[in-house]
Image (cartoon, rainbow, N blue to C red; front, side, top):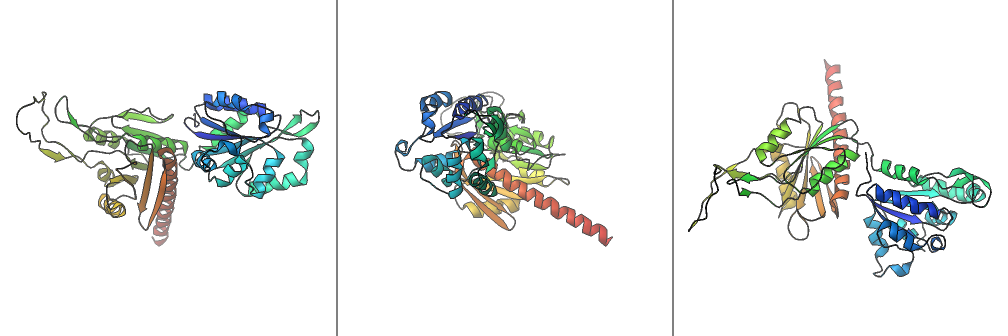
Amino acid sequence: MNRLAEKRILLGVCGGIAAYKSAELVRQLRAAGAVVRVVMTPAATGFVTARTFQALSGEPVWSDWSDDRTGMGHIELARWAERILIAPATADTLARLAQGRADDLLAAICLASEVPLMVAPAMNQAMWRNVATRENVQCLIGRGVQVFGPDTGEQACGEVGPGRMVTPETLQQELSDSFGNGRLAGLKVVITAGPTREAVDPVRFLGNRSSGKMGYAVARAAREAGASVELVSGPVALDAPNGVGQVKVESAQEMLEAVLARVADCDIFIAAAAVADYRPASPATQKIKKQAGGWSLQLEPVPDILATVAALDKRPLCVGFAAETEHLEQNARKKRMHKGVEMIAANQVGGRLGFESDDNELLLVWEGGECLLPTATKNRLAVQLIEAIADLYIKQTTTDESSENDAKHSA
């Protein structure tokens, strides 16, 4: 499975002969569908030119503070990246990271970032064995930095020993694996996404502004977390994420039938679709012709998909979405209680955020708690949402098992 598609990778390149391998790594990451931005240390530009990385990545290359025209570029890059990989990572850069320094652009980005940081050391074998380097590496590992390599072999200086940067193929695989955290491994997840269309006549329909971007991002994040994912989608202009099963529907009734056919053996149901609340009571079989005067359309409620699944005797953990224009928290809590579900992910629509936007902001509410996921891309929010759902599922499963054991002991 290709977990790197559309992932944002910031590649740091330091001053060492192994920098030539980084050019091949960029090529491979791009071929896998990743978006790559390269930040070079000033020393790195003496080994490979910035123009090489710009040609391979298709993105501007940063190499010095002078490239930061707003003064906030290092913060923007730190927030943009989903993973930061430094390859090659020299002894000097490892020391900077261990000391928490921010006196070059790459070190400042790492210090300002909250995403996973990975390093692929490359240096002379004596430098790698030096106690200072070893202590710096152990310090970084203790902070959660992932260290790949180094490999052992003949080095550019003619010496033999540990210090060679691991291969681009290895680094690509490590990056790919880092997006599959396995929190939902072995679980089946059914997700709805997009709008529904309720026919007025063979030409017209009632619909809404949903693009499906959030639901598709959630499906991708759930798959990357190890789940088997079925996506029931209304009409959208999006392709199903890799490894995700998809069925396309139009109306709320079709979506309900597709969901019920799939939730019997599923563990988690996530209702991210913007399902119509009403539909025409009697859709016309022929096109309604334009006429003078007004036109009345009688509506009736559509089936409530989320509430229907939540009411099943043997039901999955249920998560719903709520798009609100006011009183976000109050309406989200009211909807959670009314639907009888474990969690509601609510978002404010209107303004710069909403259905068509690539960014969003979510307020998660559950029994006894809430969490605000601040404005970010829908892909990033989806990963955070899946983490929260996994936590809730594990907690509920543990509680249910404990209750069953108590009941057995009591009997």
